[in-house]
Amino acid sequence: MASNRTTEKTKNTETETSTEAKPSSFSRLFHRNGHEKKELPPVKPQGPPKSVWREYFESAVVTVIMALFGMTFIVQAVKVPTGSMQNTITIGDHLLVNKFIFAPGKSLSFLPQREIKRGDIIVFKYPGNPYDPKRDDRPDNRPIFTNYVKRVIGTPGDRIRIKGNNVIVNDEVVPEHHIAAREINQKAPLEIINDPPRKPGELYDVYYKPGTEDDASDYDVFQGKDEITVPPDSYFVMGDNRNNSEDSRYWGFVPRDLVIGRAMFVYWSYDESAPDTGFSIIGDFLFNTRWSRTGKLVK
Picture 1 (cartoon, helix red, strand yellow):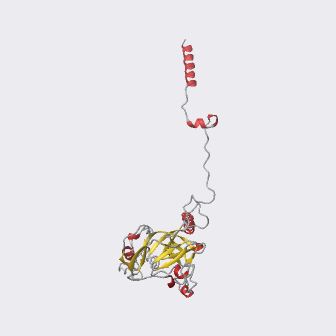
Picture 2 (cartoon, one colour):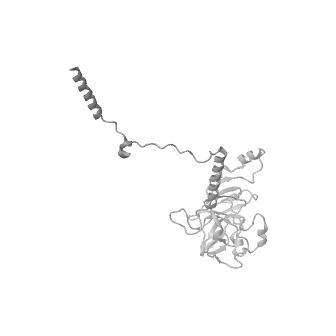
Picture 3 (cartoon, helix red, strand yellow):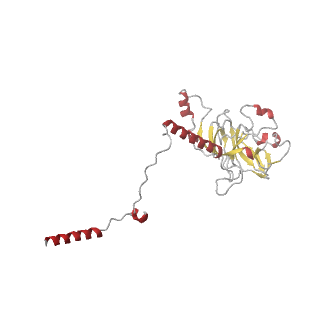
């Protein structure tokens, strides 16, 4: 009897063991035939191990390549050395230029590109002065190598006239906000004498010395003509400091292929008219930097 009971107990145990449910596993659902996937042994890196200096060198090369790509196709930093755009842009302003927005070729609608239009402030390579070549002998005014910053007044096909302090494009006076100002010195911003209320449509400021009146006959590019026409793929540009700007009135038009891009904002501005602080270079940087102009949009 004891033997039969032992046999029965053994059979019941085997039955319970064989019918016991195994815990579920998501991995069994995705492995063929429910078998566990065997992990492959780790792959050893090929070649000798990289040194710290090699990793730094490779990182530096990648950084330089990315910087060169950005400077070539996207943005460029320029410094403003002259006062032709005072007070819109002051001497000592360092600008970032958007090169992509005016990229050559046909503009694509899904990209942030567009054509150059009147009122844009552009950076371009100085084309040279065919009316007075001797002015191009200065080392700081070399054609093609020197960058200029001016405002676009005329686009291809526009007819330009100058009468007094008014610029007339296609028989309509360009709506500019005229401000009377005078120069304190060659590097300081202009001193405002009279700033009348802005009229509707006057989107930007231009500065004139009090009592001055311009005329087309004063400029070489007109050569006795009352009106000139901007040729194809070219632009007529002027500085906002109208009495102290060498621009299209003197040397002609800017070819499209010399345009670098559109001035975006000031990333740093140093007051070159300020005296030395006496606290070395660091002191001059801290106290002569125009911190209020940092990040200022150019428009």
